[in-house]
Length: 157
Image (cartoon, rainbow, N blue to C red; front, side, top):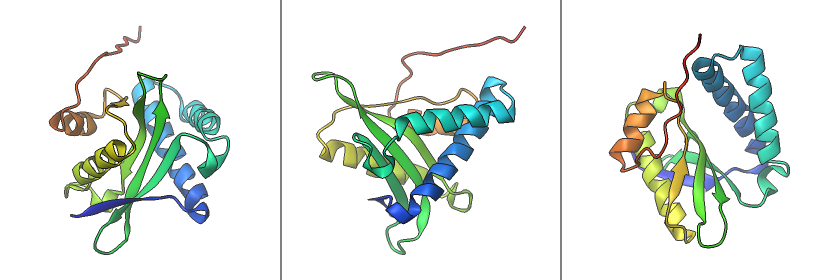
């Protein structure tokens, strides 16, 4: 599947952010042991803090992942410019492939398109975080050459 990225339009912003909140809250609840309501509140607060000006927030890039042939939406991707001069990098905040498009290479193609965009912006590195329970994403990132630099572990007593 050929994939392209395009910026989120203003009329798509609310749906984009709501999908990001939903997925992030689900990941928090599934992987941190927080109750769903608490996870939703954390997701809402975190996203509001990162996007105070919506699509106009400096350094934030909200993208729609589209099928290059049809132009139809396949998913969402969000990344941010981070770091100080000399140590600047891109942080992948979120990537989500819509359920009906999973398992057909869309995630890999979207990551490769994302990396091309990062290079075109003049950045030489990408950082990301992934919940330990997300084995599918971890395997994808590893297959693309991403390496673990830290592992946070928890034991509930």
